[in-house]
Image (cartoon, rainbow, N blue to C red; front, top):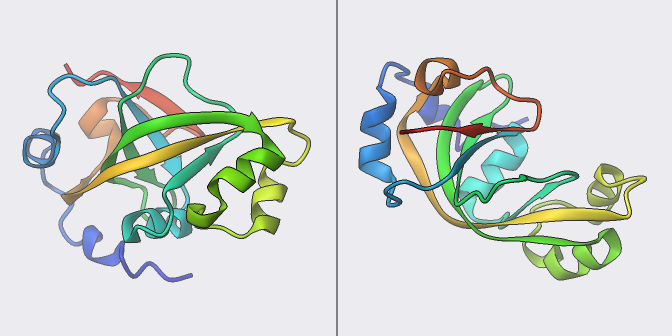
Length: 154
């Protein structure tokens, strides 16, 4: 598995969270969530090929910005993106609505949602790559979640 886009992000991991947010975040006090994303999907989000992040369950609170926690072997928060909308629909319709910018093939999509009648697609807006990745425990005081966690940045 290639980590092409993510490799340069692993160079120096000692930057502070506040420097990253001041430099790259345009939202003064949005509600944030930390989303765990596999490296292969993170790469296609960062490249712009994947404009929808799929989820079987979704936030209960409004989320305007998502921190991208890339799972092993990266294990760091590498970027943030704006949430343009969250689509909830029947899985078959969700695929038709998002397939052109899904960043995955239909077989993978169907396998992910197997057994589910409804699914969610987070429409990815502007992506801001952090100059230096951050550890979620040090930066936000939370362990990397299996799916997502809310982040208080106040």
